[in-house]
View 1: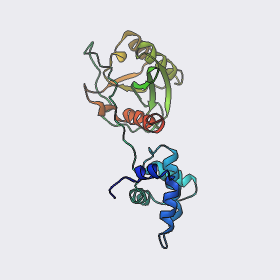
View 2: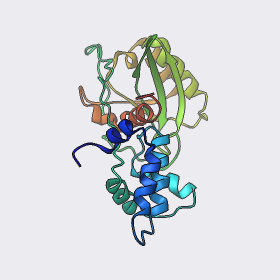
View 3: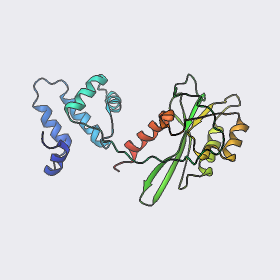
View 4: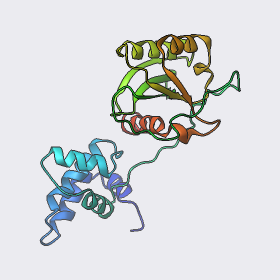
Length: 231
């Protein structure tokens, strides 16, 4: 127990799945022996970033039906620990350049129908060639991405293009609340004009309170952990 399993396997040049297979084979009457191996393979194939919920879903898709509680226990026993990468968060706040609307969502990200509550924000990816910025609109009803834009500058064009694409998906009766942080992008004339013309309702997080837009932050975290960090 002095050294992590991952470090020992690297030194020995031994596949993790092989290790867990032989480890499982030594257990007498272990009904989860096969599942342990499958879990280890899924975990490694997905860059060690799948938590128990994702592993549980993947097992179900492979017709291995066990409870989330059992998945959590097996992960702990097999030392399947998710990598946690912390990076500096992109901040678009540029001071109070105008009155901010109220926080209408008040951290209630539930919704009973599509196009009732939208979330938006900007996140930054550091690539070898430079920084890239992603700006999505997310529907609170089902977590689906309504629209998105990507660019090398976090400017008005980035968010306005995204908003135009999102507005194109609405019927004339849909007037969702669109929630954002207090970034300057969401107070500039182009953004405000589009909001007013379409009849959307603005909502903003409190100053310096990222948890007021936690659902959007969580979306960014999943993308980066599962598709970006460590690649």
